[in-house]
Image: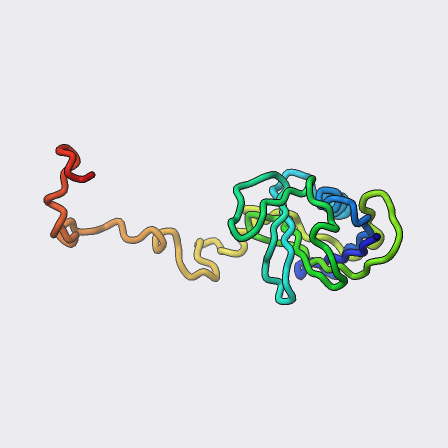
Length: 185
């Protein structure tokens, strides 16, 4: 079978990539085709997630084997065929390309047709892909020069007031604790 899978992104100006893939191709094949189509280096811990109709994440397919989530099996891109998880037209998935800020491409299985091909091929490119990673400069632009930005707090607010009075600490119940006599454990 041949799958037609389309990806878009709310950050890119009209960004869209459409791929045709043999159903026996792996998620690693799709990952490599995506990276090639957008010009990103292969140096991030990207993942695919299968999604429901509300884009809520389900099964994850990781680039490398990681600790397993008890709810889902641990699936790795080079061992997982597209046909293992993509079963019906309209099925949704996301591809996380910036794991630090959880930015991703929204994908959908647009068509399933008879036939076969080798691997995965990008058949349509529209728009420019967003930068793969948000840089420190982008973060500074979000937070602003004062470090508060839209979040409304600074590092000082986050870590608290360094001025405190030792008498404000409640010592009740703590004077009997001793680590020396072994009564703690």
